[in-house]
Length: 233
Image (cartoon, rainbow, N blue to C red; front, side, top):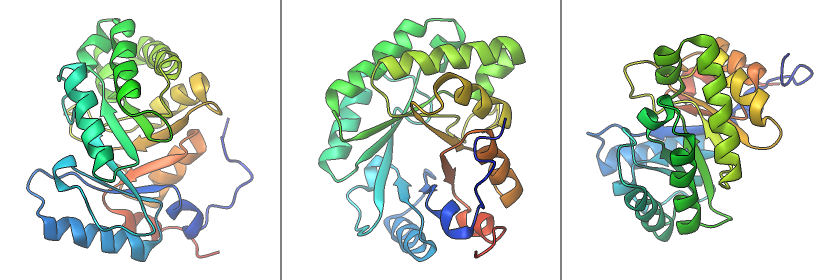
């Protein structure tokens, strides 16, 4: 079932769902400022940059960053302190990476504890988005079992106080967002948590499919190219 069957997806409406993202390890401060300037020109919701690039001058935009990125193989306290420092430097949203190995192994309580630690460090109104690396889960477990694991994880991170679930870092060799993963997230927590599709979304048709499956936010590095595929009105 489409999540937004009656909504006309105009350029402005889609822009308001976008985290314009620059997480390249070789990005300079000049690159980050250019990203912020482009985000402002495109009218997107947020800009997402590496924590070492904070603070940034991004008036009129939501500032997001990442923690435990991209592997998730950081101690929970390290992720939490990374999130806390980022908030102190102006971030209002933190996209944290889970230990995907623990998730694949079925250690859902460990993933939940990871998120609880972050929630303690960055209480509301800071937004926590939890990156599940869904393509890796589906590759390891198969489609149906992968769906079940993604849904379990969504329920667990919701109990831990997360605000959104997110498909991917965009850096894992298994791949990025998929319609299947977004649909599984929507079945689990649609209407309760936000759902961010991220990784490999490079054109309007893919973005449209993610939104139809239940995505409420899109993580894009090529926002301009995606938006050009949507009508002005």
